[in-house]
Image (tube, rainbow, N blue to C red; front, side, top):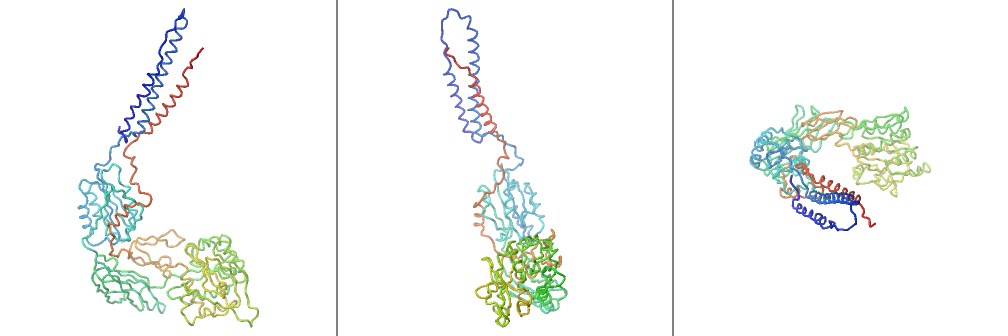
Length: 639
């Protein structure tokens, strides 16, 4: 048995105190002469015998209380035998992000580990991509070297904070020395470590870059794809980046099917350049851009793109009758019959009486007009969650505006209140019109710089006077800043409220030159549909195909595919392209610094069995026993 605080055992000398007090308090016998003692002798002897036993028990329990407390505070324990032969433990974290997979990586890695790990060390291995992807428990050095040589290449973007945490948790408390070896090219984006790890100073940190020279790298990506003449002509804006110290002179190729467009590019060191390539009558909806240059990281020399028609943005239009309303006819014409540049739409008339919350998952936008009065309560409740998750809600009622807007406000969709319908007093009065446009909005700034736009001049014969809360932003306003079309941000989505309905009875908006582009631009910019419904993902990135299905896109390799009408571009993350490196001195200080809860490497009690609490319990039992015996002592009588 060992003690955590053995110096406290000196307090055992305190046992002498109750012994001394016991001896000093012993009764001195006195002789009293009586004429005859034969009647009291046996009784006296019996009392003295009982008294002596009780005094000895009191002395024993008092000594036991002191001894038990001393042992408890000294914290006795029995060490456990270590299951590991080595006391020197090293955890190796190998960065297996895309940028590490250069030619000769396995050889560089084995050489670096052999140089930085002693033969007598017990070594564990963590292969880290987007967190720890594979772990090998503590083993001999040669086992880890063999394991490291067989690491499967990864093309994912790296994120290694969780791997560092996992390394800290692997150490055993009885290790005489602890070390973490980080093998990486130390790109800043991969090592975005928070300031709350607080790695203990007794853990050695070693940083190993297995490559002997700085990386020579160039990268190609696509900024924008434009379809002209219904896809007969496709323009691709390409971004070429040079991360190296020498000038880049290379050939650039755009390929779609059997059609190839080629050009040359020159990019100065540590700079970038944009280039536009045009392909006529492409033979496929899939294309690729290739930078024909061999460098240290060739994976980012090719970029896959979708150049076909994008997936349609689905718009729901709840109707309450079999006859199509004027609002639906104008919205459908604006969105379906004229293409909005690269965007396409699908407008669906749905029965408002049976429209359910589950139906919302199929649409990126919902338009509410007078027919919305037939929607059930649970649909309005679900609309809030729908918008918060990125949906767009457009509210533009006419005769039933009071009812519709009261529900919109009651269910927390927008802070807007209906006041009254404002109409011209007679047909000879001048019609109303919008007076102001928000130039800061993505919707209206396009029209702000167009001199011939009629967005502020078309005639309005009636409108709903609305009171908009402070969280609403007016895109178009009447005089005195009275709201005309307002925008409300709600979670990831938006709610658009219009004071005029989308028909030609209340205004000339639907027959103006601005209506079609305004409606299309508003839906495209506010639905949260990225790049007109073309999904752009990185290799290894997980993303649901849709909210309706617990199914993910296949992002195991780069390429383009179509899933549920959605074009999906998968490319290697360009964050792996940069040639920048961390300042390792600052990085080490960041790992050591603790501004939050420190990571506990392991439970220190796992290496020993402690018994202090048993001694404390013994002291309590002895103390209680002493009190019980004291109460049972006979009371002396003066009679």
